[in-house]
Length: 172
Length: 211
Image (cartoon, rainbow over all chains, first blue to last red; front, top):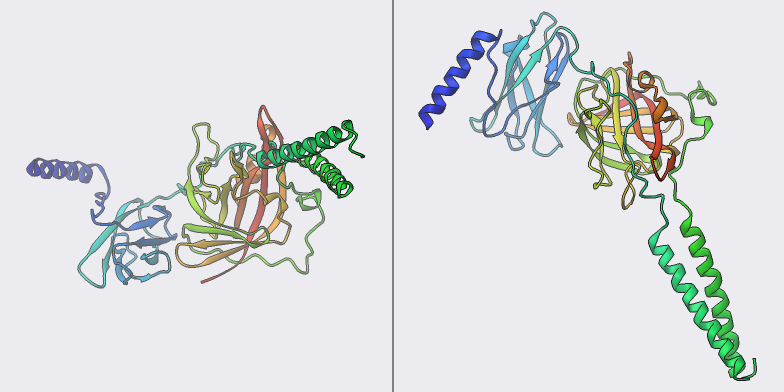
């Protein structure tokens, strides 16, 4: 089973390496490096973050795309370490592996950055209106309606009582 | 004694009758969300040029985490949104009333371009995160807390209502050459058969940011 898996992944790697400018990176199973945006233009700024370093710093390596080393600092957001680098203006289109290594322990995580010449993001704009309501505030308020009915019941009881007394000639 | 109790019963009866009638009457009224006045529209009174904050330079790309609109007491987490099959912006799950979303295939708030945030005005249980969005005024602040720890501050330029049947896609979603933000919810009249007839859209641009 394990052997099959290894064979399969080797085959996948070979196919990918033949078919692409750069072989795609495989995310670490024990946590990965989030790359945002995952697709950037040359000259663009990229933010990466990972939860794998448990609140510690990490050394980032964007050498694959020619951006060199950078530091991931702990952030207030959960236990994430966050770092930024700039894609060199001379970077060629392709998929690059960005790596980060936790300062404590030997844990290493990686994520993919796709470099494109035209802006891939924001090209598809949403269209039309947004369905952000169902009218739940538009109907009668059930609690208020119930209270109103209860108050009217009290009034009816009181009225009946008074009429009853009057009918008996109890001096209203 | 008897006279006293008669008076007491009579007053309770009258008070109950009035309260009951008022409760039923006002309970039938709708609690429609606030809608922007014409003065908040782009074509309304111009923002005071002396006090209007200057646009701030764009921030590096970082995904947003929370939206805060202090003037209407909004403080909500943001989830990533995609598009529906018809190409309209998807929405957060209606069951979570204090949750908004952002169009994650588009511009991140603070980056150069038009970032889009949307949230519900109500759900089946009552008011939701952007119930009061239509009450936002020109010059109000909108803060977006971002994953890199920075906060992008936007200042409102206009609040508009658009009909779904005549939605100005380019105006709302179109590219901008400075960092801008749109915050969208439902509005523009309601009918029982077709629901809300349009959207309230808040237009804002980046005017500051801090770590």
